[in-house]
Image (tube, rainbow, N blue to C red; front, side, top):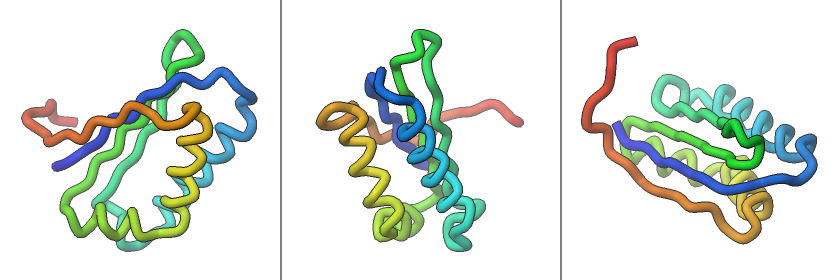
Length: 100
């Protein structure tokens, strides 16, 4: 399993931010090629400003498919705007996890 951790601060209008996040998650859920292969969570830290996104996928093919979609490109651009120029992003590889 592979992943990405994206972090940035956002203290602007919650409406456009939440709409962008919900649209992205809905598009992922609606993509048959991503179902069961890619997951995405978006969190707001307790301070109400820090945003933390966590994506996980099973293969390079899944990631390539996601990145080729218009909804991904649009969301990536919005995250760039929300973060004020670009978030801090770290690619990851799963080492261990708990069972459900």
